[in-house]
Image (cartoon, rainbow, N blue to C red; front, side, top):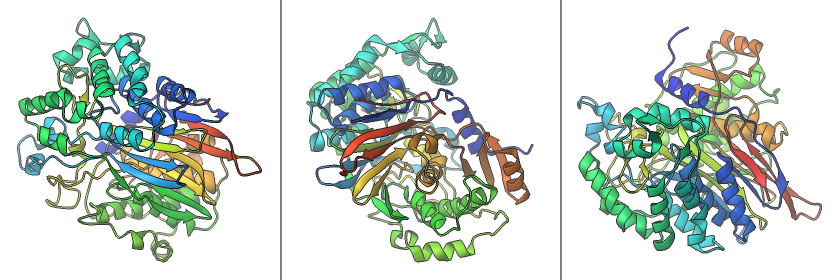
Length: 544
């Protein structure tokens, strides 16, 4: 077999690290689906106390910081889509922040010695925006007191929880790069914690206590921020106290397309989620096909190549180089593009440039009894981010700048000081007749914007329920010209795609999606929720 691309190998490693546990599906007046049962329960507990979806989202995100520390947390960033039931409005909250003012991107590209190493460590740390986003949701929409939202996260970090096989594999893989400080609690007697061991993170508990008492200022203007500034200075990072003090979460209008009567919303620029909608638009111009047939998968592969090209070509800061969304999301553009796509043979992908994207991320969804919804994707970048943690904080710092595009210099996705960091996360909310119909999202880096539209098509085109839509086998295009298909795709389909010219490779798993459907009674009132948590992970969908 020909060698796979490095990106494909990385995705394959990430996906094969996931549990095969089948997730629970439930119905109720509220619903949470997240990547860890303890985080799901944290959200349900908040809802049971009278909190709403926005309160629960903060509690879930904080709990995930503890029980899935390699994927997200206070030192990370993300993309959040919300539905405000009172105003009947979808909004996008960006917490990806801005690139540090001191950034020297030339140190991140050839011919600088160690330029690849610089993209992984201290120099790749960008402004963490998650705490500001949590505070923005709480202050704008929350029912409960801020300090009550961190009780579960504090308890889990202070008293510990059992390491799962999945977490154990991630700790073992990263342990050689940990500092002596982090090895002190991620290991015992010099060796990494094993599945079944108790992970206790007392310093992280202390940081959560500070944030609970003092609010976001503890992180951005207080002792945590000073500790982060200190570790950045000592390790040669670009992030500084000034970047932390200037950071803010930003509310934006989302972007949408109509797919056969359903309004599909996702994050607008500065996120780069628009290619997900381009894929849906192009697929809407295709003839009716059987699910996961050779014809369907070939069409989706060709569509997804073009959408990937459009991201590389047009992604940019909306206030500096805005993508031409009026063009890309128009039916006229979809019709003309589909007419020029390859018929029965695979095309060769010719990119306008190259980029990579974080694969190690988390997604969760939550809906409450009033109909409010949060669909959130949060990340540290790589597993355990930059592998840097300021002593005494328990907080991993991201390596967001690893996922900038460094060639050619000065392109819209370069690490340009003070400009917004562009994220490829794709949280999604689907509306029908002015009412929320579903919410979903997934981690998976390069695969996110391909996985999400496949789930949406499964729901809208093939009438699957949420669990079926998430669990159904997927495909993903990987530069330069690989079409990765999950193992459950039939051998005959695999060979038919190969005979059509696709460089087809098997992959064990794509993504770790979470979603929910909103159910209505005959009077149009919410009667419950149907949740789905990906069988590829170890998460849980559960309702109160």
